[in-house]
Length: 449
Ligand code: SF4
Image 1: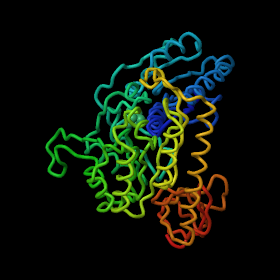
Image 2 (image 1 turned 120 degrees about the vertical axis):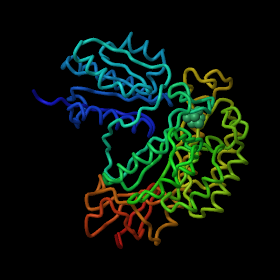
Image 3 (image 1 turned 60 degrees about the horizontal axis):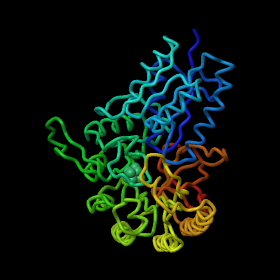
Image 4 (image 1 turned 45 degrees about the horizontal axis):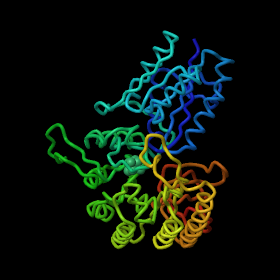
């Protein structure tokens, strides 16, 4: 009997990417191999995201395309999972309009996937298995990484913040932190497998609170996020530590000091500001003011002068006036972000902001979006240009996908660098002389490994 193949399509954030690595690991362990072509795979999994309307639309578009695949090859299994499946109205829509979907499961029971898939194949019946809430954290699930030198490591799940535009607390549940020992063990195994850089993942890593269930002389009973970084910093063979995402309201002095004391913690922070208007921040329930955010940036820069700061900004939140938007532009100019993800606000079903008055017309949102992106791009280009002539440490990830004569990698500040090297430097931290820059990347030449 021939081996069966799978294809996983992932929408959304790094948490979803990490979940997809687990799904791929489970499929590999069940004897499947990864197909490079979606429509030829025996099992097609779509891991969904519900943070933005655009991802919803792309998901339904993808499902529409799979109708023809099912018609041609009825034995193909179509499975859907992820945040969208935690919403009842989505499940109803799938049942009513997309009968070619065989398996629906949620964010809290991905560990059940192999069993659910086997049931679909054996019984040839459709299965909907979505848990309403999370049970205990399941450790030790397999994983199949895309990158040999970098890995995502979940340290916590869920979010307790209830920003008014966000569906995550409803789809991913309340905050749950993994035990420090389990995280250390996973990182140790990753390093043994050749990983040089880890990114610690959580919706709000600053509120990580690791509890130790057994007595341990090295690990405290309660471990803060900064303490976890300091523990990981001791891992031999690990070169770099990053994290995503931190909420400004919970960023502690202790974490700022970790940048100074832990040499493996990269000088980069992704610190979503969302708006420069304190009025809008309050309506978003972000629990900090624009002034507090600016003070935080000052404190970070006073302790870590070369830190790269990146952010997320939502344009056109309900009630955003021209004055509020100007406040965002002013904050952006004051901070000088290295780069930013910018989003047009889209109402998410089930969130408080869906019912807010004064929704901003699309044309105004687009106009503001373009003005904001222009300013952000100018700053990004200036920041990159300032690095020309300097020597940066880059973790070489392999050959560039667009130019096989170049290697590609990232600096500690997370800048993308394409560079020439005389030998295969993949997996090494390389000193690269930066010779040129654009808005989004740098080019250079490796000087030594
Ligand atoms: S901090 Fe706010 S935006 Fe981020 S996941 Fe939690 S609720 Fe959503």
